[in-house]
Length: 92
Length: 171
Image (cartoon, rainbow over all chains, first blue to last red; front, side, top):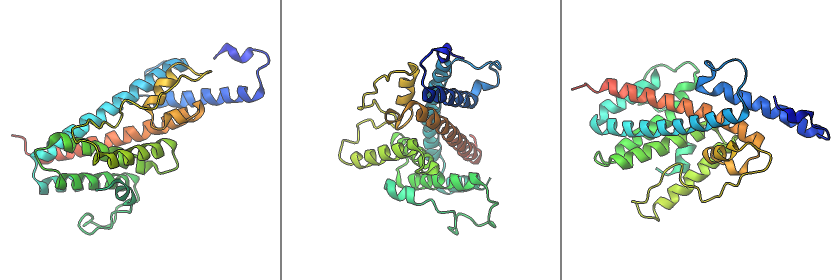
């Protein structure tokens, strides 16, 4: 992927860890939501990191939104039916 | 409820009132959801109905706590997250209640760009708990695990929201 590997005087240890890094990056890429629509050729590491940052931020936002919704829902439903619903989602 | 006690209560649901039906098949989903759901019902009981913001903040806290507890202490990010949440819960009683206590605050720790890394690594470090202390390889590895746990937590919360909204008769 990168031409840096062909540079001379590259120590063997850093060559190995570059493989490792590429492996980890592709593993990350597989976790991203758009992994299926992306073409088979792997995106650049910078692109993967960028998408990962965006994905994490959107997940954080979703947690915030869901917490707010849960808070609203718990306010409007009475205790017993809320407890029942909570138990039901546990058993499902 | 104090955070250390929340984390210690990871035992399976043997409580009679919560599992009236015969024992569930050994599935990870109900077990891991138990911690969050119990925290939810505690929050529901202890917080007055009117304080929407406080309750939503506590729910978000519980979400991150249960996510980190589920990941266990073997992960760098979960340890760092638990440390951060415990610190904040202790401080909450010392500082004013009106101070905004977000889970992902503006960090006091400066994340310096490290040499030999893509530029985005710095931004990623800020997002993943415990990021500043990791080398690049661990950062990528921890990020992958963090994303998996985050998305399963989101799915869990969506299920809870769905089941509570089904319960509530729509006007």
